Amino acid sequence: MRTGADYKESLRDGRNVWVVGEGAVEDVTTHPATAGMVDEYVAWYDRHFAPDWQDTLLTAPDDSGQRHPLALTPPTTPDVLRRMGKQISAVHFLTGGNMTHTPGYGELIALGLQNVLKRLNHSAEEIHAAEEYLEYISSSGRFLTYAGGGPLIGTRLRPDESDRAALKLVSENADGIVVSGKIQMHTSTPFAEDLLVTTRNDMPAGSGRHLWFIVPVNAPGLRVVSRRAAARHQNSFLSPLSSRFDELDSMVWMDEVFIPRSRVFTGEPPDRNRKQSLVCWMLWHHSYGWLAKAELSLGIALALSEVMGLKSSPETVEQLVEMTVNVQTTRTCMAAAELDPEVSVSGHALPNQIHVAAAGINTLKVRQRMGEILRGLPGSSLINAPADTDFTDPVMAAELEDAFGGGGYTAMQRASLLQLAWDQVSSGLDAREAAFELHASGGLGSWRRQLAAWFERYNELANGVHDFINVDLPPLDLTSLQHIEGVPRRMPQIAPGG
Image (tube, rainbow, N blue to C red):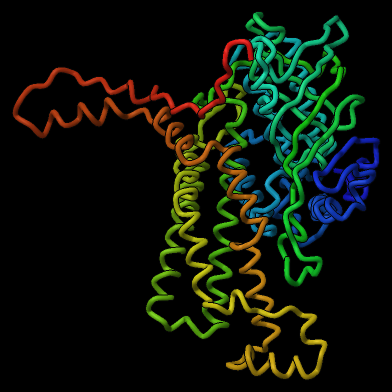
């Protein structure tokens, strides 16, 4: 397992990163828009060497006494899966769910790739290459992230329909392929080392072949174009989350990028409702991240109820119970997913997908309500809370203490908690997370369709009513509910000839 210093050094490897509003970033480890997130990834690696974290983050010793990061260990048994879930949950809680993509997430991407190739019964060479890559990142800790390969608006608006594909196969030979194009939003690419791209269009056009490939982020001809950094105050007291956890969702532009044959795979068309898809383990990881964000909101609300003298208020108690029920419902679904696992085509333990979908649906349904409660609970103090720098003036400090202190807590203590609450539910980082999940996860409607597609008891339950009525019914068939199509996103219409 590499150290954080090893990872940090790998980021100084000639990557081409552009941050909107900041311009070219020569060194992501030192630039103000990226350095904070690099430090969080460094901490992720180094935490595996901390004695008080090893029982949480590492496997049990093997016959030779060696231990391995659970995050980089394929779950061969339900017990390993359950331990991985506890590890993912513990790590997510440290960041309040704001660091959604870790090197452990990359392991789950590679595991999903291997499983899909086996499900499709592809060539032994492709399966072997996927297995070798999985072993490579498992042993090295190399950071892999994922992009779905969707086209940008400019591509979709081209007059010639045949020219609207996000990616084009420039050339191909026994050594590999050369690809050009631009693909849309994905997470943490400025900080990753490799990127798995799954194309939505066939390559070449008309071939019916969906090429997937893994490309180094510092590959010649590849540029990472990141969105603007989340708005945040330079004083971290006023932005305790925003100053640390901005993953900089990005586009990737490729200009004749070469991918060696050992990193090229034959995938399948995108289908969010397909079971044991590429993202089946990733959905589990995502849901733990959303749960951690909800748990942080609950934790802040509980702390505020005590510090603001509200814990005896019936209205506050009711709100805290509502938030607790929301959090526990999701956590129960996640526990069910691990205690009632599926077996993947590749023979690994897979969190039960319908339980994971139920967890995701619950979290997305209550997200806005959880934020509303937290915004309202402390009253207008949430808006008027001072900064730590305001206390450097003795006169101002005394007045602030009179305004915000008392009841066993200082003004500074209350201010720090209020600023955390603000950053959690009223900041640019919070707005980014809400917008990103709407697009990246497909929103609540997508998760509902997934659960509908995966639910297998429609006919069993419908025909089970026979025992409760005195009239015979012919067999009922509700399997069509598993194939409900979602409403397509409205796409721009282009008049003939442009």
